[in-house]
Image (cartoon, rainbow, N blue to C red):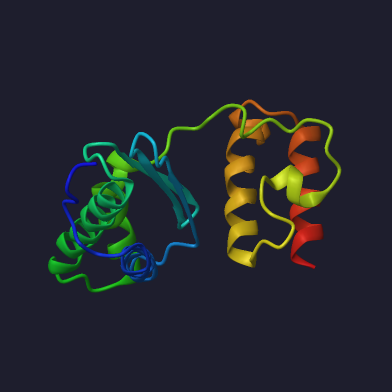
Length: 167
């Protein structure tokens, strides 16, 4: 195996990535690491949007995870340097800066199907936090709202699941 690009251990890399996620106020984080190919995908939600970043440049998956973490950290620092005055201004600048890694919708994720459990309808875990529930609701509502091409029945099903989840 080739020499590692970064010497940080997995726990350190993940801890630093979590620190960055906390700074940008991400509400969820999922890391997919392929130990054979080295490819890593980081998926996170923030302010009702999903972002995804992949890296397979380095042979070792930890190096790719570290590269992703640093790229997100440096993008955040660039936004922070502008001297943001308000949360709204920060959100606008963040969204325009991070638009390149905003996830494109995967149509299978947004299928409603015949599920009756609120968490399956919203596409979240049964132990999801309020923020994850809200993000799931927003994502599904964007696709299934009658004004976006959905049906009133689909939207009602999503709305009912959301109301059940937040109780």
